[in-house]
Image 1 (cartoon, helix red, strand yellow):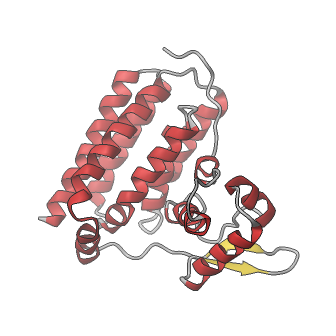
Image 2 (tube, rainbow, N blue to C red):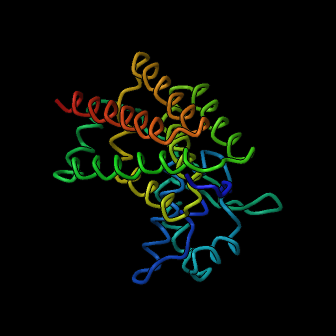
Length: 245
């Protein structure tokens, strides 16, 4: 069992990491879009200040401004001037529905099963590692808070708060690389997962599975955490396949 105490890092720390080589503009757009669509920054929240964000991404402020302008044109963010200005999230998740789900599946094509396997491996591993660490009070409170937020979510909030809960599990591993991997895996499936109709019976089942995951992690039970996460992700994959028919 790992003995190091957890240090809670917002998933934004992993999402807003320095861009790799290649097209800095495209990667900057991708990173901001990931933070917005996964709910790391929710509707109405302000993104980090331009100076801070450009430094964290390792891009020029001109590149960042160009990326923000592009996302503003598409309705994801807006820039406000003045004392309380900045860049604010305006994106709202579209309503779920079977038609939207099937369109997202067509867009993903043959990559669906690969994406589901990839997510399974990353998230079960993350849960196992998180449960094997000595969690400090901040880490325990962080996971419990994310679970409470998810259980109190309205239907319109549910999918983004679900993302935040799953990312919180990854955060407790203490590995920014793993948090980034879980975020990227979730983003790959994001349009599909968010298009699943929010059914009361399914939410009840998911709530029980999320509680089982959190309880196993907080109890320091790596095998239980892995098993509960696998059961939850298998159920989600089965629901996806059922709607796609």
